Length: 76
Image 1: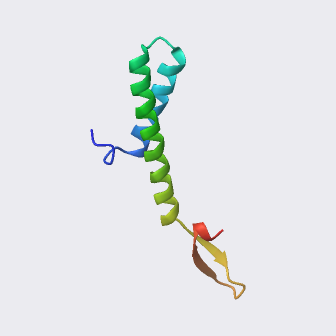
Image 2: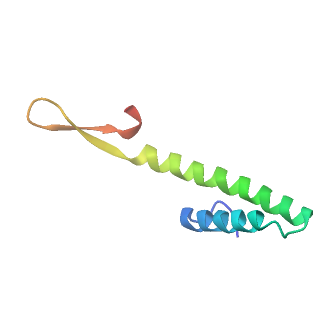
């Protein structure tokens, strides 16, 4: 599966699975390193997806004239 096409929830679920396996400590060193590298890639992917979502969110701010103005969330 291409990492760019994976959904956030799927990436997070896989990351949780990797953490459980690594915490278990029963995997061989090579497999542990592979899982760690996959986990790092998944963290970057999830972080990027969260950044993208944040950029798309707008908030409504009272403009003092009885109305509201829309402003990007990142301006907070």
